[in-house]
Amino acid sequence: MSKVNLLLTGPSGCGKTTVIQEFISKTKLKVGGFYTQEIRGVRREGFKIVTLDGREGVLAHRGMVYGPRMGRYRVNLKDLNLIGVDALERALEEAELLLIDEIGKMELFSPQFREVVVRSLDSAKPLLGTIFRGHHPFVDMVKARPDVELLEVRKGEGEKILDYLRKKFAPFRV
Image 1 (cartoon, rainbow, N blue to C red):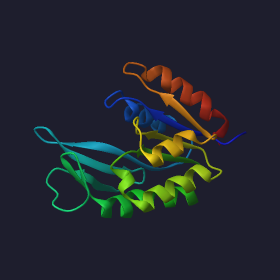
Image 2: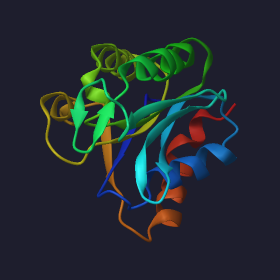
Image 3: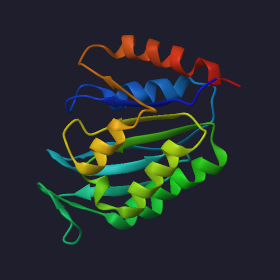
Image 4: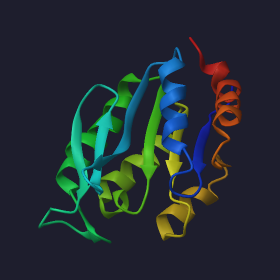
């Protein structure tokens, strides 16, 4: 059984996170890591980090005053590191499958995040994640790794992608 580093990519809103959430809700593997969700009001106000052990934090928000700017948002490096990076650190110790949603522009402001992504990819544990579709030196390096499989997600292909994930990660079931 060989190591799997599978990263979903595709345009915003194509269903990458939804597919991942559906997959992890049904797998028998002990999954550790985090996913991101929109924070909505009348419009999208920001994004939160949700760990698989139940912790939450703000990744980025329109109303934040401090932190690196990404478009209309400011990135909350404190929550990203204390919650998101910590969830990956724990997963490296305790989980059977690592989850990173996502390796994106906001997350890349954190050197700690970039470092734990590399350690996760290098680990013996299978990894499932999402990655920014565009170009960035770190993202390009991750995509170019010979041990990374990229899977393009298109709107309406959720079931097809889920079937592929079930087959790909089936050997790792306990």
